[in-house]
Length: 440
Image (cartoon, rainbow, N blue to C red; front, side, top):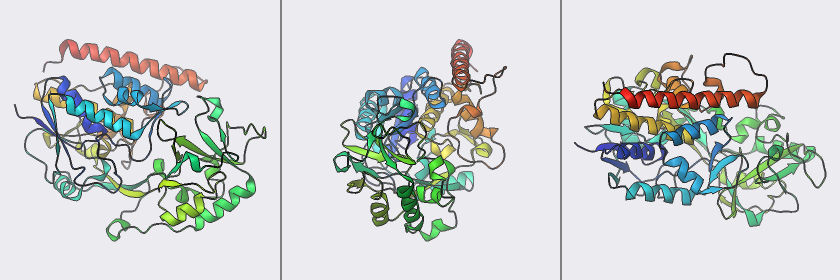
């Protein structure tokens, strides 16, 4: 039997390969790096994290925590590897990006049934294929997909800058996690009202990097990853109700809550690098240095990477995909990752798990595994394969996409805990039923 061709060595592609190989099916991952890098990628390894090093909350009673639990139950390679390469981040699971990528790469390349080819694919190949090229699919393959699927929907995504720890003025910042969750893993840069208004004034006047002509007509900012300067222009206090909100933080030196707070999150295990939380941006590099250096503690900040903005594309999945992630018009072709319209690292990886499981089922003549909508993976799958209402937009994991509980619970933590418990029970029940009788 010819090997399954997986196009893209990101989180989704690696998860898909891991699932196939675990079921005794040979596969080949085609990854265009290091011969060619997308505008947002820099590292040679597989499963590179681009926008942030955080895989979101780890708590059982959170949407992201629940999704991770479901993924681990399904045999994820990404989540255990992330835990092995975690850095302190309060209640979130964040990783050392390079060590995480290296670890995933080692696991994938050492599996006897997985081969990695450093080669750019420009046409959808024959045979069984999983397309997991992410939201930055190269032009050649994008044109081939467009011929097969019709027009893309597109938006823009932005990444935050990274500064060195040693360049921070520690007399002006303090360590704390919001609401004292975690072990004070965030560095907080407090602002008084005057400092905030000065920063706000300069931010909204700062010059953005120009867009390429062919992208201008499609410019559309995705709400979940909005450039900080675009958010600021929505109103003077918008940032204080978003990434700069001071709620849950007390400067122990003053005993007071700041007017606004910029948080920095550890970027690597050694703690030598920190990223500016929520500061995705499309400002020119010189403007980033000028304006972000106005943040208390960052006056002499050494920026190891400036924020960037890039075009993201995703297919019209509700019209195009079956619930098993196969193409309705050609079921030998599966899609996985952000190109399907799931939004986020772990969401992309989860879709790769399902695409891998269901490609194996397709090859072996078994029924696909379709998880119920009261699981987080099932709810996301349902959303992208037809469950959205109105114009299709990317969706990340959240408790709002799960069916309501039979009785109302006022306490949010208890309510979300019930959602999570129900989801895991439903997942276990579904897997037992599937394993007991899934032959078509």
